[in-house]
Length: 359
Image (cartoon, rainbow, N blue to C red; front, side, top):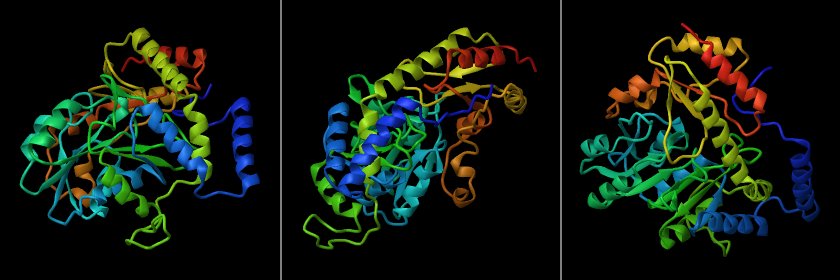
């Protein structure tokens, strides 16, 4: 019984529905632009109770386009968490700025105290990451950004469907950046993403950047590459949006069952009362490699997301950083499968395998 970390196979019923969506587009002969994209964006705005959403080619594009509005120069600093996927850091540097790496809390979200220590007169923005579907202390981050006159960008790539109180994440800051690639909670059949702009002027400014700086009147108004979402991805994502609440609910059910029935004092879970389950993270202070080997032996695929710290990567070793807790956590965490595609037998097997581990 091989249990993949994330099962991307498509069942028979959904396959039929998706083929129907694609077939309709083939009949129209429209694969870029069109009503499908506008319809998808409007559906997202309704689901997230917000406005000014633009579908884009990837989560990377979403972050980059938000940062481009800041007109960053090399000495301009953007504070980001020291544990994240490299796209968060790369977007800052490609947009012209310099990353500064803040430490993280025990729940893997950015440490607001570290952020406050790192703010200087060169700081232009903060990017917070709702890592593994766990919300940052967004109210505190809003306070810091307003007090210091900084832009706040939320990286929500792992947090679709997450609310902080009554509001969706991505709607607190100046920008909300989402990935909807095939590994995410709302998942396309390839790369895609979307961007929320709180300011209508930013929204209008970004629109031409989606297609090489060409505006709605076919005039070239700026220099940019192509960041637009494919029509096929928009149609697929709109269809899957109608089912995403079930996915969120099933992942939560799987994760909570594992947490409840795990009985091994060598292991702790990183969890939060309010969250969505992009993944479920175990923390073990020693013998992580042996635990990974043990789970692999029982045909359970696991992932480490992410090691090393961003400030340890070759391009960023000279950048300013705080990392004490991040360094400890990055060597102690491992993520296990909780996909909505898992069967009851899969979940029971994962629990039994964890419980049987005795280093």
